Length: 166
Image (cartoon, rainbow, N blue to C red; front, side, top):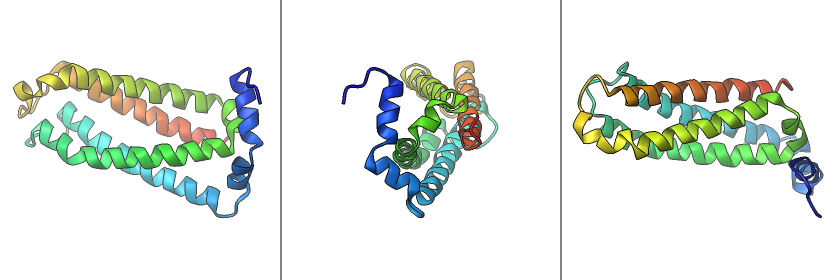
């Protein structure tokens, strides 16, 4: 099968046996959806705790590097489960997602959140030793934390709106 566009790819995915099986299963789709929501909670919860530390709102007595060290394994596990379950959910309903403005907003916010995290870790976080134990983190760290929280809230809200066909 030759795919000429993203729409063609989505049409092909929609008609695969595996996509149909997930979509029409009485158990598989709901279980995947539950895993996706649970893992999103784990991922977003750990990201929010770290971002709030960057903002100086919580855990101000804990070094930033220690908060990161404790949370990163949980964040990674949440992300892995969220990405796997989300990928399978997308595979089961690609045409619904293709036509959804909310889904496009969700993807854009996820990409921007990834760029924000990468930029933070390649720049500001490299100098964490200088500000690790201060209650007030540098402005660039606070900005990265704020942007991260805002983008992940956008992902969660727009993700919920996909279910309402927006």
